[in-house]
Image 1 (cartoon, helix red, strand yellow):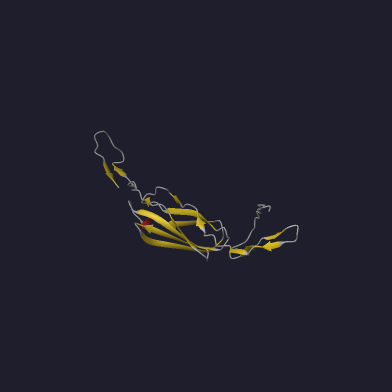
Image 2 (tube, rainbow, N blue to C red; image 1 turned 60 degrees about the vertical axis):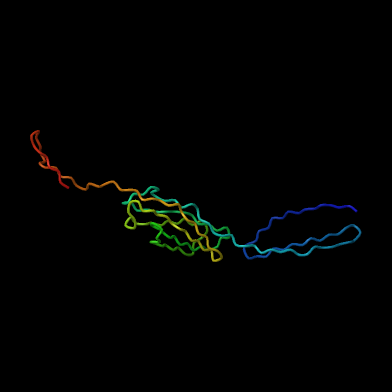
Length: 171
């Protein structure tokens, strides 16, 4: 009895939900033949993903508006619905929903500085739905920095001064 090992590698391209089956048939030179049971699997959904959120500015001051951008992708090229949830001190304060997005879309969301003050902690949560699965991506937290004081208008009197004058400054 001779035993032979055989292998076959085949690359297939099948979209999600499609069933792929295979079966082996054997024969020899004397006319004997046999076959295996049919084996099948269904191509599953690949969950959508988002790139790491990028905040600008990356160290925001209390008087600056923040924005975040990221890219959403889906290997199955499903239509994507994305919700961006902004959190300040662990409280959800604003949501932005974007529907019917295509693979590779770059999203931008803006949070006005009226929503936070110095030392607040801001982060986002991205919820991506491809109609089959939800993916949640959480950003790192960013602490709002203290803004430098702002002097809007300084008036010095008298406008013409001599060495023996006292000067007065008003805002």
